[in-house]
Image (cartoon, rainbow, N blue to C red; front, side):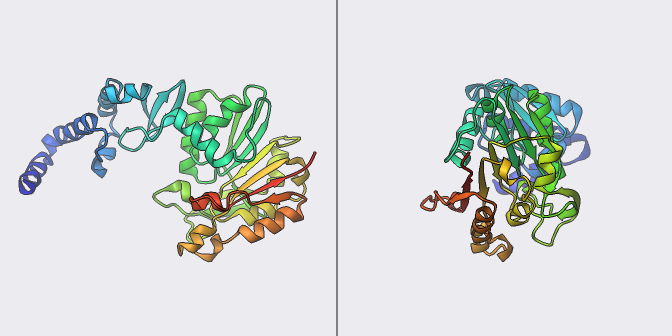
Length: 309
């Protein structure tokens, strides 16, 4: 059977029949949502007519409809689903990663252990990625609130900005900078999973602008910040060293340290928790490590800071 499949694949790889091969691959994914398409499917999808056909297939998929997906788009190399009134990213094959409800629940579980932003709040999301938490916080703070979504990696930021535009988030300001100890430029790595990109590895290949948190707060004209979330893959201490003048404007902060990555052998520069605790106390925060018993290492390494007002 394997030899037969290999021969069929080879036959369909001829120039005149490649369209049929890609169509069959797309239909197989459509019929079996749990299947994983070949890598070249994503390249094949980057053709206007083929994308349109796939979007129609996905829209008519009972599987997607059962998840509440009402619209499917392909923009700037990304598959996007509309779910519960929000546009969210799908995976490279067009299959859903999560529903809007699941993203909201994940944001609450990961980041709202000590505080849940509400109407009128100002949230600064440093390391916003593709907007996984922004989907939730844009709703939570409402039209009278504001979310500053900061992402350094240009590819990740492009997807974040696209979601902001499609969702019409007028209360979200997306900023494409790295946050560090000083302003200037830094290099960030470009891994396959670009939401894990770091400026700390010494393997950076992309030059991006950097600012301090002090400068970020000033440039975005924030008088106060109700909640600052930080998840920047080992650069936490650099960021906090640039938060001297604005620290007293920040009421609550949650920093995702990455000591677990050092434990995994990814490099000692990820071991930041002790220094983050010291810096936050130095900046006047009451510091607590509240999730030390969590099974997920990225939650165990969270450090929360509070300022009594």
